[in-house]
Amino acid sequence: MNLLEPIVTWREEIAALRRDIHAHPELAFEEFRTADLVAKQLQDWGIEIDRGLGGTGVVGIIRGSRESARTLGLRADLDALPMQEVNTFPHASKHEGKMHACGHDGHTAMLLGAARYLSQHRDFAGTVYVIFQPAEEGGGGAKRMIDDGLFTRFPMDAVFGMHNWPGMKVGQFGLTAGPIMASSNEFAITIRGKGTHAGMPHLGVDPVMTAVQLAQSLQTIITRNRNPLDAAVLSITQIHTGSADNVVPNEAIMRGTVRTFTLETLDLIERRMNDIARHTCEALDCKVEVAFQRNYPPTINHAAEAAFCADVMRDIVGPDNVNDHVQPTMGAEDFAFMLQEKPGAYVWIGNGTGDHRDIGHGAGPCTLHNGSYDFNDDLLPLGATYWVQLALKWLARP
Image 1 (cartoon, rainbow, N blue to C red):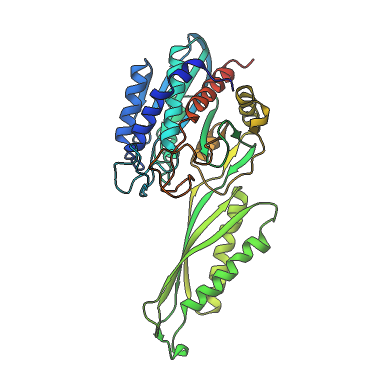
Image 2: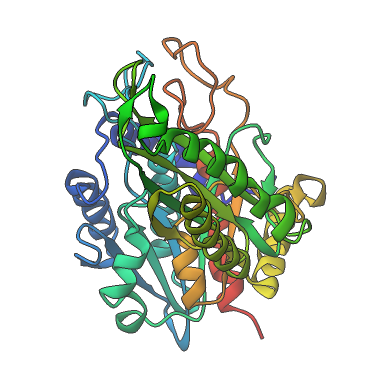
């Protein structure tokens, strides 16, 4: 493994920063302490900063010693999740109901390590922007930063992101050209009938049975309307209705999520959901309202940039440790908004299986969004080295 020696020597310092962030998690758009920590570190290393994009975002500007118009952006996320940590090791969350259960503390620390190296080794031509983004966990912080002028104030030729991946061995990377993560969308379907005594159902209009029929019918979108080669998920996760055993209620509410790898398939599913809901409820004398909310688009890697990232990875960990055709996931990621605006790629870095966790970790698995999760500090020098080599080789392209 070809790691940059200065970054290796900083491992414990970077790990201390990571554990500090882990112990003080902050939710979307509330990352004030975390942003202050990031800003202070960057300034202490002589890096010019800009603050406030997306509310709590921080951008570091690292200019090489040689003039060039070439630029790129490297992005990490700052926010934690609204969930309880069950670990009891010393750096466990000090804030009830808040936890870094997705590794954003590690993502921030790896990018800080890379920024420190680049600030001390400026013999390159061009500019590297290190982007510390708020509110990835459902808040759409990437879009907020873009709307606040991220790419107009800091022009970038390309932008890159990285996420730790539990289950993938430490020292391995995964990526693929095209979709790597799905779109994330929510729906709520409100079915209104006419309540009545359950022993006299003929006097009312039953929204419960209508919801049951509609739930079955919606799955035909996936099995009969969608191209079977284009992956998609339509999951009804909630049905709320009724309050008594002997009462047919007035309404039923169905909620759930839709995940796709293409916007074309998402358009199809949304259109067919509206059609089927309307006609099914009309046939059963109910009224219906469908609310469909698009949250994150699919995360789609640009082919040339993904291939470039894979070459950088191979130089660091060897070809056997780079899977450049990794299977995509139906999870979602708001880095997708950045890839809609700029060329780039989003990659995974192996976080291991959880053997790294200190005494005091929870009994659950070390998987994302789990109360027993903890980022693997062994990744810190590797992730930081990858960022540095990616930036330097990108700027040095012919």
